[in-house]
Length: 410
Image 1 (tube, rainbow, N blue to C red):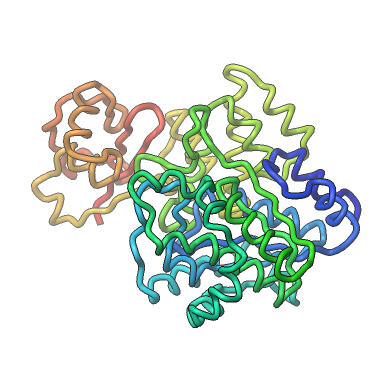
Image 2 (cartoon, one colour):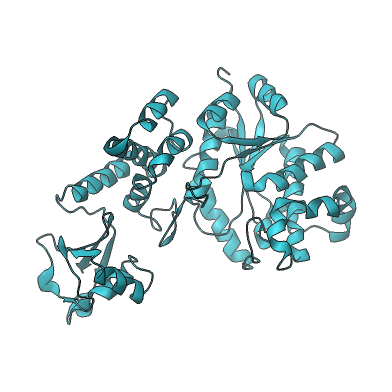
């Protein structure tokens, strides 16, 4: 191995906390390390938040290390209380298994699982059939309740009441690390910085029970300058599944991030050389928009492929330049019958998910924030018919400067 991947992750801005910094760096520099990252199957697609950890896995695998992607078929049945003020909704086994299968397919686009280059595992295999008393005797004896209650992941829940159900989560995640250590020789757990307490639990369990070295490392969380997690829009999460967040919408999300976050995201979410990252990050005023175009294109290329990234970039430029419409703009299609009597603008905004409610849509229209086919509309009860469609068969609605939606008749 040439450049130590620890130094790569450090330079690119990934590393937040480590259990044993010098030992981890030495280990990654001298041997092939088996490491794992866990993904609780709470939805049927990975999100932009997961993407940072997936990028770290890709860097690690490129450097010759072996990833284990652990799907949380078991832990998802409890739900991680970290960062949550309320208990998670309990999901059925069937839903969790479906979500885990979707994660597997998505991860296979980024990680090479062929020829034992990486492992996909599911903690349902060892968690769902545990004997409770045996588990308490084997694992529970190594955990101090006093110490667990000081963990950051439980603090937010203490006021409303932390159920014993959720209190088990840290022990279960720690047991995952122990099982992966026993089954595959896994010695390093990686995860977002909100997982620090859970990762420490696993490291301590292996060191106590197996008398073997084990390590943990956390990544910074992607947040806005106000400290709010990135990867959320008015419509909800930014998904990696193109059917849930189109490549165009995905591209637009990154194209519109804050100026101060451009260099950080280029380092974390692209493979551009760091010299180029710093050069682009140093651009000011109008020039920073070029850096945002590069960022959006590079991230979309990794997630959706170069062809989709080019389409999204062209669609974005066409709209900003007032040029031709593009099929890659988010589109809603109505039947001819639905449009026979016309549809009012408020309904269009709500159906196109450009407004969260009819009152939100009405407010945007009255305040002059909505245009249809480049004409500003301030009458909230304005009705559009098939006669209003342009030559491309599109009724193009714009909200603000950057949100576009095309409405068509089937």
